[in-house]
Amino acid sequence: MDIEFLFWDGCPSHPEARQLLDDVLAERGLEVDVQVREVFTQVEAEELRFPGSPTIRIDGRDVDPESSSARPALNCRIYRKLDGRPSPVPTREQLEAALS
Amino acid sequence: MTIALATEAPPFDLPGVDGQQHSLDDYADKPALAVVWSCNHCPYVQAWEGRMVALQREFGDRGFELVAISSNDADNYPEDSFEAMKERAVQQGFNFDYLYDEDQSVLNAYGAERTPEGFLFDGDRRLVYHGAIDDSREEDEVTERYLRDAIEAVLAGEEPPVSDTAPVGCTVKRKP
Image 1: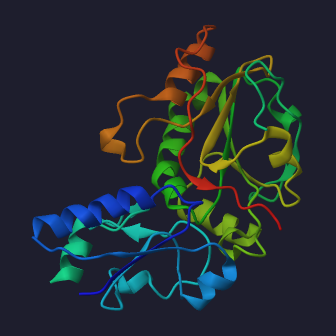
Image 2: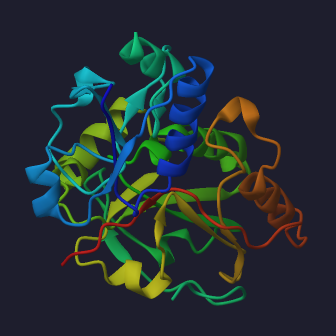
């Protein structure tokens, strides 16, 4: 399994998202070497198709496909909870589904 | 640099999403004025903006006024354009003025760094609280309502119980 964790340091949500990812991986007994990459510039954001921080891809597939096509930018990414409320991190359910 | 506590509110005169121009002097009769840096595209702002509406609803009839300002660079973040601000204000039912600081001069005067980031001024327009609206972006996990408590104190003629906290949110998007 190949997991990419892309983040921009200007958004404070990445440590929380990384912890959530690690928790979900541990619960499933998965030992994966997560590839962490910091995005520094708008050019990089475009090259990496980075729709905001954090972005997590599992075997190349974004954990939130619906919002993955947003314009590449150095900003905080908007995820949605099950009830539609905005969140700067993906939900546990999104991560679990992406790992299934 | 962010203005210090007790600093007099820097003046502003900015266009609002209501089509009117709004200056600091327009709120001169208000015993408490909160200026909150905001924007459209930030998930932290989106998580908190309902609470901004609630504060205005709760304290508006006691003379409190909340003013939101977006200074974000709309060239690189078109979701924060003035037109998009107008749309969001309608969509979210904003009951407060939402102003556009296109040249970022007001941003520079206040020294805000995050969205959302609040500055509460008393009736003399001295800064009495700066920082986060409360202590959690998850509304059902809030234990400390910093801005609400500060408003309550100012309206009662008292000092806020907490005067400075670290705002948590997106960075203000400065022009290159």
